[in-house]
Length: 84
Image 1 (cartoon, rainbow, N blue to C red):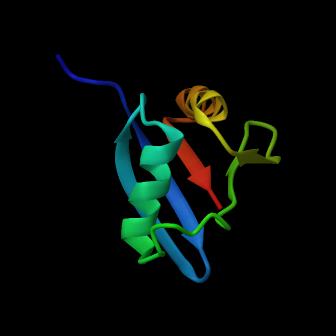
Image 2 (image 1 turned 60 degrees about the horizontal axis):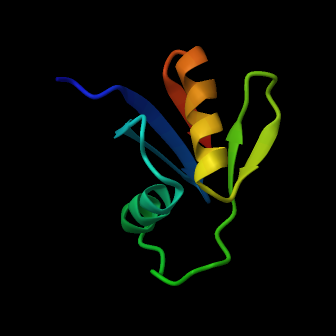
C-alpha cells in the first residue's frame, strides 16, 4: 500500500529545499525535518512556518490541525506545499 505523498518546498534564508513527505506528516515532524535540513537548533522555538495557500496568501503554521489544512491545500495545488 503506497502512502499518499506531497512535495514540500521550503525557502529559508537564501536556501531552497525540496523533499517528499507523507501527507499525514505532523507539525512536529515537519519542524524536526526542517531542523535537520537547515541545521537549526533542536529547541529553537522561534521558528515561524508559513505556507502559501491557493489564494497566494502566507498562512502561519503552528499545530497539527493547521498542518493538515496545509496538506489539503497542497493536494489541490499539484501536491506541492510551499513553506517559508
